[in-house]
Image (tube, rainbow, N blue to C red; front, side, top):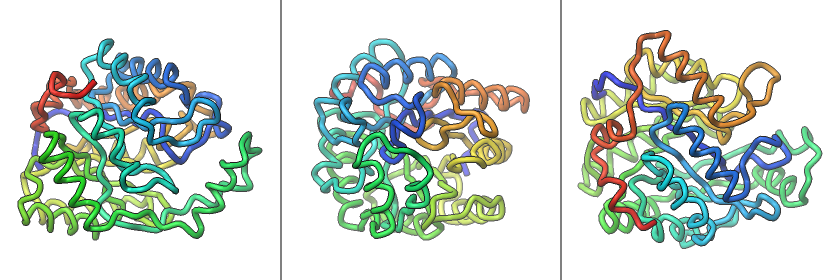
Amino acid sequence: MRKTGKAIITCAVTGSIHTPTMSPHLPVTPDEIAEQAIDAVEAGAAILHLHARDPQDGRPSPDPALYMQFLPRIKQATDAVINITTGGAPGFSEDDRLAGPLAARPEMTSLNMGSMNFGFFGLADKFDWRHAWERELMEGSKRFAANHNFALIERIMIELGQGCGTRFEYECYDIGHLYNLKHFADAGLVKPPFLIQGIFGILGGMGADLENFALFKQTADRLFGDDYLLSCFAVGRPQMKFLAQSALVGGSVRVGLEDSLYIGKGELATSNAQQVAKIRTILDALDIDIATPDEARAMLGLKGGDQVGF
């Protein structure tokens, strides 16, 4: 693992899985997404991970026009690194998942490193859903496998990485995903430094156990040596525990309402900035320095905010 001396805070502002009725504080409209993203940067986030939603009902949307309603505003107000999803949502085609990123040509996108079962059907009966599509999405995940096949991964690396100069947040939900990344690195399709994001606690992926985190880091160290930067998060309740663990071994962290709707036991977070401020307080207490956006750019070898399409 590359020793950088600073931790990068990524904030995942609004995801494609959590839905508006699960929390009134989850940003949905372009204005809400922009406002919460800007506040998260002011609280200490260097990278913003962003999805788009239909402002009418909160449904995940691949529409580039929606991205363009908040990306320029965030760029004008902050110097943050913009990281757009390529993961999409159930029902998105491969072209859908690339539409927004190809239009925006951002400095970074996420890149899931393997197909997997992605189960959140346990939420279906826990909420009174405002829209019919929400319950359908939850229940449907029992029959849904997230498609991140090798051909799609290669397409994203070529069209975005080589074609747009975009680099990636390599999202790894299992140990095998590290080996998938190693395959593409050995083939010369992507080059270091790699930002490897370990994701724990999704049903179908690695469980949110610290023993799994240790194995994940050991495997990444063996495969990538000094060619990667470690980051991680756990969804839901273990979020902050995992972030502290990553930071203690020299890694970076990701917070945000995409990953957890809470700030403490039984207490909904009122904003993304509140979660950023909490992890920043923890890192400050551990004497861990926080990377600025420009420092994150240098650490990750990014092309710069003047080279994007918005």
